[in-house]
Length: 128
Image (cartoon, rainbow, N blue to C red):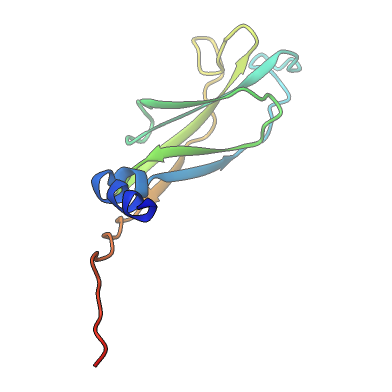
């Protein structure tokens, strides 16, 4: 019964079966946008979308200021390129891409190919 339920979930909700993730890596900033040493870094926001240069309509918060990587679940994607940037956030909620800030990180493009079809179901065999 347990295996049947898993198969039904895979067939009825294929996005659960083929969800994609991306691992991003970066260097912790050592200076603020004005060149002074960073003393109140709170974390990062990963932004992504389907258009180079934005708009970035999706985001994932990273609440660890010492983090240098994160894995982000981007959902079910097929034959699409996603564009990612990160921004730094201070303890007051100011982001490096806010007005007067120095912007986001460089942009990274990651392409996803076709999602393969599900295998056949109901396979049976008879000895000859």
